[in-house]
Image (cartoon, rainbow, N blue to C red; front, side):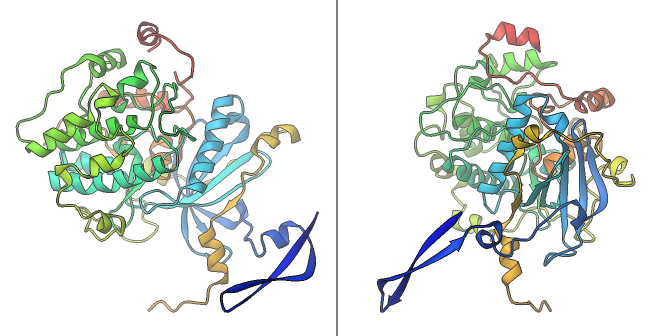
Length: 450
C-alpha cells in the first residue's frame, strides 16, 4: 500500500506546504518503527499466582528488551475454552480493549498483549500490595479518615471510566488493589460496559450481588449510577465490616437489596451517614451522582470536605497502610497453595483453525511507555465476624482480580461464603458458572434460577 506524504515546513510560526511529494510503502516496520515484539519466550515464569478453568496467572520476569528484569503479572487464557461461549469471547476482547484505552493513576496498567495459536496472554503491572480486601479483613473496619482516602482515589478512577463512556459494574474490595506504596489500583474489567453516554441504559445482569444496584437486579435498565450505588455499599462495608444488605442465600440478599431497611450504626459521623444514605437510594434519580455532574456531586459532599482533589490525583496523600514487602517480586500476599507450586505454562492440546483465530485479530499490544523507553537516554539511578481472607480466596479469581483480569464469567454473581463453605466455594469458582445474560426476566424467575 502506498502513502503519499505532503511535506510541510514551518518558519516563524507559519506553515508552508512543499510541492515535493514523498511516496512511502506502508508496512508494519515503518508504521510502528522499533516496536518491541513480545511473546511467551520473553518472560521467565517465577510463581503461580492462581489457576482456574480458563487458564493460569503467573508472576513473570521479563528476560529481553529495555525492560529486562522487570516483574509483571501474566494471565494466560486458552482460546478453545473462551470461544465456546460468545459472551466470554466478547468480554475478553472488551477487557483487553479497555485496558489499552484507559490510562489513569488509579487503574491497573496493561503492558503487553499477545497470542499464540492456542492461547491469549495479558501482561500487566505486578501489584504486590494485594487486595484492599486483605487489609479490611485484618483491620475489621476502617476509621473514617482511612475510608475517605481509599474512596477518594476510587471515585477518581470511576469518574475517569465514566468520562470514557464505561460503566465498571463490579466494584468490591476484592477488585481494589494496592501498589507498593499503598495507593489504589482498580482492576478486573471483565464486566464493564462500553459506549455508554448520558441517558443510555443497558440491561445485562452482572456483578457481585452484595454490591449490585437494584436496577440491575430488576433489569429495569441501568447506567453509570450503578457504580455509585456500589460505592455506597463499599463505603458501608469499610465502616461497618459487612455490606449493607446480606442474606443467607442469593434470593434473600436480593430481597433485602430491593426492599430491606438500611440500618446505619450510631457511631458513624453525620457526614458519613448522610453520604451512605444518598448513595444507596433505590430510585436512581434520587441517588447522588446520578445526574450529568456524575462524580462531581459526590466529590462536593461534606464527607470529603478536607480532601484536596488535586493532591489526590497527584498521589500526594499518604496512604493509611503501606504494604510490608521485602522486594519488588514479593508474593507474600498470594495463596501459598499456588506460589509454592512449580510454575509451568501447560502446552495446549490443539490450536484453533485460521478462521477461529480471526476472532482475536488485533489482540497484540505494546504499551506506549515501553516504546518510549526504547528511545530514552540511559538513566543513572543512584474484632469482627469472620471474613474470607486472601489465603482462603478462590485461587484464580483472587489472583485474577489482583491484576485486572476477570476469571471469565465465573465470578459474575457470587456471595462471600462463610469459612465452613470455603472448599465448596473454591470448587464452585474453578469452573464457568454464570447467570449473566441480556434477556429480560422477572424477579420471580431470577430467584428460581438462583
